[in-house]
Picture 1 (cartoon, rainbow, N blue to C red):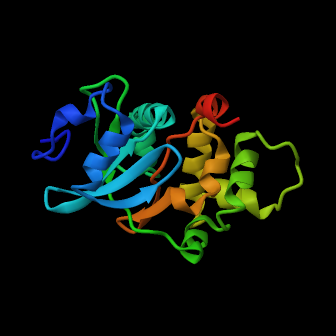
Picture 2: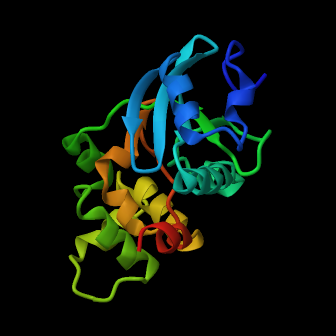
Amino acid sequence: MEVPLPSDWDKEVYKPQVSFAKKIRYAQERAKKVGTGSSRVAFVIEYQGRPTVLKIAKNKKGVDQNEHEANTFGDYYVQDLGITIPMIDYDEANDPAQWIHTEFAQKIKPNQFKQFFGVDHHTLPTMIDHGTGKSRTNNYPPAWDDLMWNEDSPHHDYNNALVNLCGNYDIPSGDFGRLANWGLFKNRPVIIDLGLSNDIFKTHYS
């Protein structure tokens, strides 16, 4: 049974007509803040006896990112790739979505990241661009092909999933190079932030 918000929270606060500042202030009074960006604030809330994450938009950028993230996390093909944090629920009562609710992931360290992908997080976007054919150069280490395409490689599943994700969806590869966008869930690396698309970048950031 999915719960749209903690049962003791006033659902009216998260109507679109309520100010973003009030939404954030209301959550801060009831939950621990674990992250904040230019568009959204993340809070830990308990759900079925475990910690989970509620991301609330703090401006129009955040609303657009919630919508995009809910659509992407909720896509069955993306879920089957096994590289994204599981989504529990999102704001279906309002259009566009004011919040999104996901599982909680532990922080991932740089050395852990390299163990899973075979390259550091700074290098990963360039390797993924090579894999999707979006790279502007053919000057790349031959080992990259092994990391992405060799099914016997311990790094194949993760890198191949990212190539498929980036190649089939409107997601800039540069977002995968930010360690803050990753976490560990059930001892696997997962993307915890997929709110940015090329269209959102052009609209709000370029």
